[in-house]
Each structure stands twice: as structure tokens, then as C-alpha cells.
Image (tube, rainbow, N blue to C red; front, side, top):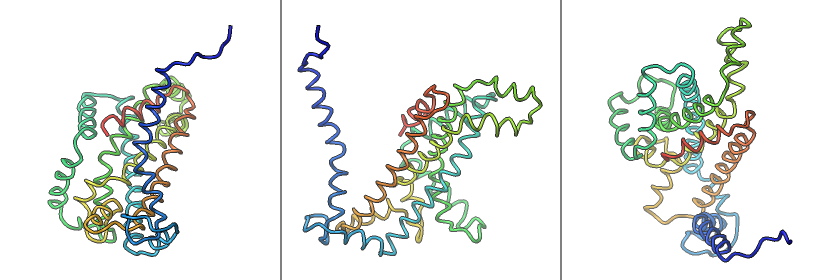
Length: 287
């Protein structure tokens, strides 16, 4: 008997339908990438191929400043969310108490609450706290953006680390304690290496989530600290220029690199349990 698979019209239809679905999803992105090489003045018509939009974008101080604000905000958000989310995930798994169900509910609410609601809530809160909070020497607009973006990102990291900790054997930590290892030594030598894939992937995911946060950023940003999504939104009042598409393409490449690193780390989960990927999926349900 031949092992060759028989042709199925249903399978062929599903394959074609899947390809059309992917084309529908990624065609707008492909258009932006193509028009990023448009040598014309606007994105309405493609007048010729050239790299002038990239040169114009990199020489525009307003665009460079907005990109810098976005990258710095994303890095600060990743650091804050990773610190808070890692310890929250460990506490929820290893030392759950009466507070654990309430914290899980709050984290779930943070993830499913519409961003416009969070933005409207953050704006009067920042105004109530004051203008500079006494933080001399800091860019207060940058601090506001990091705090606002860290709310959702911290919940994402918490669920990823919690899923990883759930699939980890606690006997290893107990064995280290029987050998007179201090709690800090048990954490650095046993717990942290085992949860490192979840921590790193959570940090990278928090970084990418912060890059495209438009709604919250538009409410909490101040003059001089305008992130890239807010800059693009403001540019819609006039005609979009090719340099916007050029810099958006570079940001897309940066995001794909970060997501690729996160995917690679999740695939190399040392425990092989897939808990990191499961946590990533659970965390993105509310997105």
C-alpha cells in the first residue's frame, strides 16, 4: 500500500483559507513596509523607491526624541514589571495566604479592564499626586509613563512566573534548606535559575507591550515626553509622511527581534514542561 496521503478538497480549502487569513492580517503591515521606501512627500501615492524617508526620520529631532522616550519607557517598564511580577508570582505559588485570591482577582481585572478606563483613572491620580512629586533630577513625564505602563505589564509577568513556579518541584528548595542554605542562597542558586526563562520572557513581553501602548500613554504623557505611538496619533491631523512609515518599520523590526528572543527562550524551557508558554498564553488572554 502507498503511504502517500490522498488529496482532500476539505484540506485544500482550509489551507487556502488559512493563507488568505494570514494575508488579510499582515497585508497592512506589508503596505507600511513598502511605503517606508516611498521617496514622495506623503503616503497617499508611491512616487518612487528610495531610502530618503529613513534618512529624514533619523535626522528629525522630534521623531528621534519620541523614539528615545518610547525605548526608555519600555526598558523602565520591563525592569519595574519584572521585579514586581516575579516576586508576586513566587509569593502566589510558594506562600499563598488569605490575600492570594484577592490579588489574583485584581490582576485579572487589570488585564481585562479596557485601556481607556485605566487611562482615565490614571490621569486624575497623577494630577492629585502633584506635578513633580519632589523627584528632582528625574524626567517626570518619563516616570509617569513607566508607572502607567507597568500596571498591565506587571500582571502579565506575574501570571507567567506563577505558571512557571506551579510546574516546579519545591523539593529542590527544601533539599537546599536541609543543607543549611540560607533563603537568599536558595533563591539565587535554585529558584531563580529554574524560573529564569519565565522571568526573561516576561521582561521582553513587557518591553514590547509598552512600545505600542497608545491609549494610556496619550493620557499620561506630558510635553517633552511624547512617546512614539502618541506622536503618530498626533500626526494623523496632517498628512502622514513617509518618514513615519520608515521609523514604524524600524520599530516593527525591533519588536519582532524581542518577540523572537522571547519565543526562543520559551522553547528552551529547561524543565520541558511548557509552563512558560502556558503562562504566556494565559497572560495574553486579556490583551
